Image 1 (tube, rainbow, N blue to C red):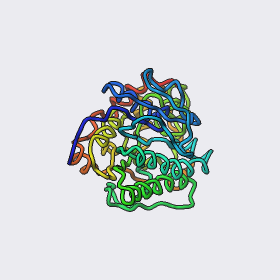
Image 2: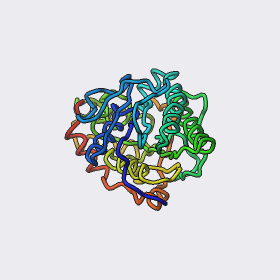
Image 3: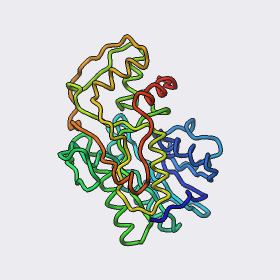
Image 4: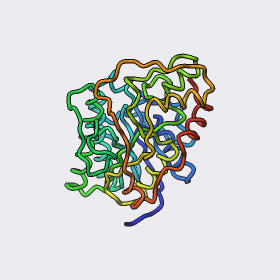
Length: 309
């Protein structure tokens, strides 16, 4: 497989979001010219590092950027439950029309595009750990379906553009990622636990807390994304940490790293909440030479020290 340096002018859709802003940081450190395209409905201009060109645009409408584009990293989409449950139609529009327009921009510019999908395409998996060949077990009309199905459709679009138009497109399936710039109230597990622990409030664990997650620090995830950008692999490729932990264990670790006196309070289980989640990353190791380096303990401790809850 061909492996090259990340090209010079890179467009990051969703570049003002949690993940996108870290990608912009990493690209700037490599000396790239970076263009952030964002509607700022869920992202923040505060996240965008100095030196990045900002284009305020909605990816659900056609994208028309002047000048050459060497690479597109398509990360735009509401990713937190608080956002996609509040704006279900917009989430579907972004996953559908937004991915279409990002792919069409790549077609017109003749550049590679990496499309961010998600482990949520596996749903509540019947295969464990989850390999890229697994088709998933998703409820198409459940409350989480707006995000799951938006991403599944985005994958289908990516494959179609590659086949019909010859677009150099790759898909990554991102597993649970955490780190600085996550919003305290965005509904995801780790910022919720840290916010509650730092406030001395009970940590709310849905159900028995024995459901599992595999948590990847954002710095590791960004390395994987850029490795995918340098490759010519079509994907999908799983990017995530294969170390599996229970939600209850994450709650107790959050209390420990913050030095909190909080307790754990069990609340009602969430509908369609996956019971197990763990990536098989053999393909990423083989094709990209990538695997996570940051342990959950180190990542949590570092994030807790920077958390603005």
